[in-house]
Length: 212
Image (cartoon, rainbow, N blue to C red; front, top):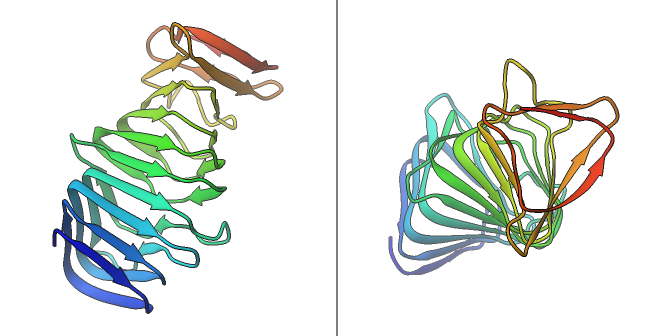
């Protein structure tokens, strides 16, 4: 599929849902019971309020490879959940959210997850893609994160005590030459990073420790 499509009713399907270089707007929840959802080559997936994408079954998978997920959903809705495996391909995935949102889906793969938009984003699923780049809003990682994490453009990241010796971050970069990244660390919290953290223009909300 490579044009513009709006789905207004609650839908469920099995098989392959492929969106390449087109836009699909979901007005209501969409459930993939079995098969694969493939969003690639500039695909734009728009979740309107009261909509979400979710898998329901042992064989429902998702591949995002050069796609953008724009979330305008009600904060009560988890916009992405339930897929047996959700993979970010080499061309990456952007999740853009102007309002608060919680995403429970675990994410793996060789690509980059970019988080943009002013809304607070809580990622409760485990994040094991290559890199996470945060360019807007606050991001709270409450699942295990083993990806490299980069925060810039005034974005704030926090790890909720889930960074451990057993599951360290692959890397941590905060800010750049003239843009800030903000790190929030709770009381008694340690953040473990495989390689030495890189601090550019950094702001801290810090009451814990960083171990490199």
